[in-house]
Image (cartoon, rainbow, N blue to C red; front, side):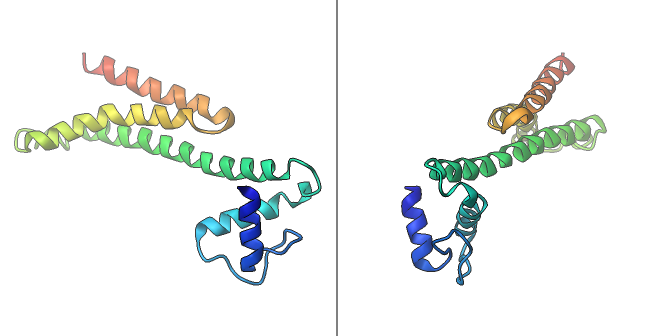
Length: 146
């Protein structure tokens, strides 16, 4: 499949046969990522596992997004917790409907869980602090409500 992508990039003029950027600019973000994956790994082009290097580099760049998403969920939990503790939401808690209150509490429980799941998918050693952070938030939430 990666060979087919390479042929398509060369045929469209986005990339040359010697793995350098071509005269045509990539039309979208996906083609740009594919082009950079081939160009960044062109030093391996003579080796047999060249296409595996390209595929791994594409996957690693996409896995870095999981780290940012996991941190977002942790930050979202902290914002909800601070909002409730400062009584931004609690002052109006009696006047808001049940669905909004349910959404706030569901967000408080789901954000560390989703942060934990996306933290597991983060690349390399970065997954372990994210897992510990989100597990800590879950434990903190459960013990603080007692």
